[in-house]
Image (cartoon, rainbow, N blue to C red; front, side, top):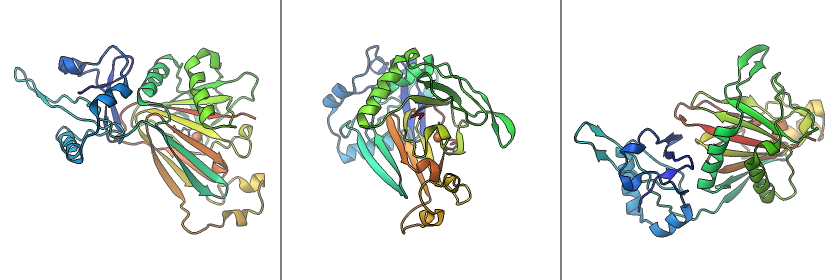
Length: 328
Ligand SMILES: O=C(O)CCC(=O)C(=O)O
Ligand SMILES: [Fe+2]
């Protein structure tokens, strides 16, 4: 069996290390059996029909992938590749995804203790693969994305990514980098409520009433070092961040003593004591945020750490990120 990963809008996707390509330009080159299906792609049933593959097959798939420029994917969605020769005109390489899921599609949850009351939860496959593409397509198309002018170090510049803000009514407005986005209503985008419900179910006791959406349209879009430590979120905000589409690195770096706002706030004992490190603790962490994954920042993460999504030359595809927050 073989199939492409097809989004509801009929576009196929291939993965290449950090990149995610749409296959719309080449879809017409695919043999009929590999043309994107009109029906939504049913990951579960395809998986049942393909079964496990052996290590040798896995290795041979990887070799084939290399011959056609290193196509790889999430470890849970092994890709295969077929090369077709168009002898009438010229040789063209056509990549097609063969879903040979090696393992279950169940989410995996990992907690990362950053020390001093800061921690992260990372849930891979929080949303099923195909469902995540359905949301991606909806958001890409229906969100009124804007690229505002912001102020950084006293200078005006275009924010290096698209954005949109959704919030419950009556909340303190969000202002960052001199920009105050208008808040859309949750009712304007029903799928966002569906995602919010799934997040609340995974995080019992957590509450969110606002959402900042980001769209990175390619390798040059990024978010610079910052912490979401605005007063309206309180001293220990919980931020749940859903990633869709192209995989990007998310880097956390511990704030330096003078960067840290902990002295300003004075909300947890003498700074010196709190800064003392225990052995084995690291100052930087990097996560490749997968399509459909959820990263939750908790405790004093915003007070003590900065984070960024740096430019990545190889991340050519679009990524959509949703950060759910609670305005107090
Ligand atoms: O895109 C991401 O993963 C992070 C976005 C972010 O840090 C923010 O919106 O504050
Ligand atoms: Fe952030």
